[in-house]
Image 1 (tube, rainbow, N blue to C red):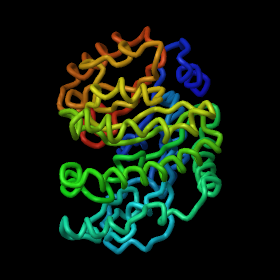
Image 2: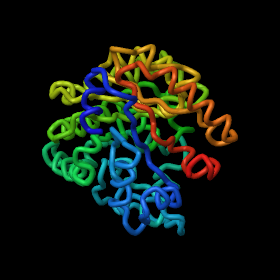
Image 3: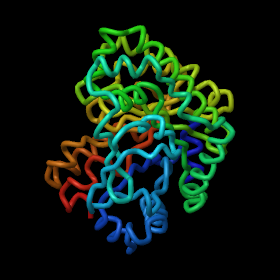
Image 4: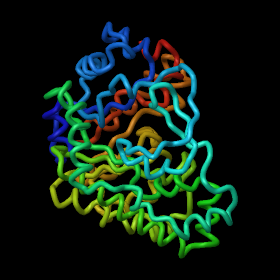
Length: 356
């Protein structure tokens, strides 16, 4: 519940284990649980689902526009309009593809074809020029977004703010992996200047969130795969994590809790991210049964972890119940642990019997 989430984010003891929700993509599951159609009655369905599952914390309540559709993919040139969450900075000049309700958008063509094209492009590129709005203007958008999610669940679930493009994510999405890797090794000074500009833009968005009514901000940067960091930990510490404290400063000054989010196993970077100012970690790809982060950071940091994906996707009912039981037993007495109610990667893949 809302009050339980507040106590947990402030590292206070709570009754039971607080739960966090991530996006559910299984329409049959939502219908069985709520009696509602997640496509036709989206907000009502998810608000009811959060109440039924006793969800304490989430970053949003999905709307009709944000729910995945299985119909068709649209391809077009991005039209330079402003987008919620600042993605227009990433997509400008690109050809994009998206699903019908735009819940999934990806770049299919960038304005540079070769590495030499990229270098010429970056010579004149300033991402700040692609975001004309002040922090106050962006804050109005973020407050509306927050209210759209918080109001339907009121005192049931605490809704946090969500900033996806913290720093590395900006560069990764704008440039793409092959050219970004070459920049790291061949043009480090150019990449350094680019990261400085992205950091300034990111700080403006965090400042905008700090002007809203949120109590928690999720700050996302994909720094890892399931095998570990995407680059040398030393490189990430020096070039990415070292900039986080300044990016997060507006939120920290307002007393907003910053939870760092990344896919993959970024455990080796957590102490550095904590020193940069993170109040907690959202770690969907680090199962509790493998590494108990809550035990490691108990009393110091907020932690959100889940159950082993592979067991949920491939195990039989006995294996799944055993894995869930072991995970729950290992964390029952630890405050400030949020257990994922449903792991987003398994919502549409795992056996029907594990969902319903």
